[in-house]
Image 1 (cartoon, one colour):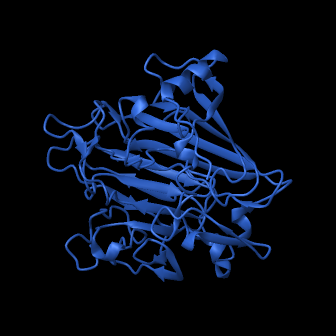
Image 2: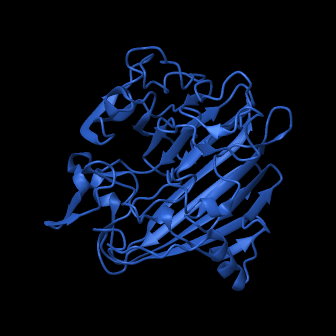
Length: 380
């Protein structure tokens, strides 16, 4: 398996600066608009900070990350904070997939499955800054064939982040000129809309989640791998975030279903599942996350057909918060204190032809894969 040399984030930033794209003195690239400010680094095309205004008019950093940009590549936990994992995100069942009767074996880095294409996925790599203005930045990556085990064919991809008003937009495109290959991307964004400053709780359960077009979800096994079954969340059930606005993420806390809902034989609690987006009108808000403490609401629009909701089940308090977050006695990221929201196609769709998503997850010569989403921030 190909293993890249470890290069510091600041070295990658220096290389970008040499061709005319200047970062801030701390190694971040900043873009801004009147209602929003976002900061990025080339490592993983990662969003490090996202500032919006709360109900008191105070600037709040609503995403997770680190103060030291050089910590991203050495963090042993590597939670994929706000990065672009690729070329195929989430799980590939049993580390294998088949194209035209040929089976390809991928790195099994998540039990018997492959997660985010393995341990050399794009969230571990430096992108190149190829465009930078006051309100947008574009990153590019060349992914050589088999640089992630079993991922055939060279892939070239670009990620453009932009801001306008109080909205953060993400546009991605990728091509594979030589071979038909799996491509499925996402922005792996972790939120805490309170910036860990609610004195009553650091957990995410007081946030509300509304997904009006997502009554269906993929049933998964204990390893978070879909079984093939598609479930329906009845009103009031643990996975119901469609029947009404204002349902708290922790609405099922204390029920027998809560500990086992995210797999792992009940060792976690909350959510780590994929919700289908069905029959949403064009440009509709498909996910609305909100916090009554900060008053901040984040609305997702996307061209994707589903979204993962992960309630940070495996954080153990060892990872630091940024200086823009937390309280005097609250300095680390603890279990269930954030939520990752990841828009992408059906998990492991290349191994489930019954869903009819395999063709959409394969890109070959003459084709261009595209992905587009936006987060609009406002107040309750």
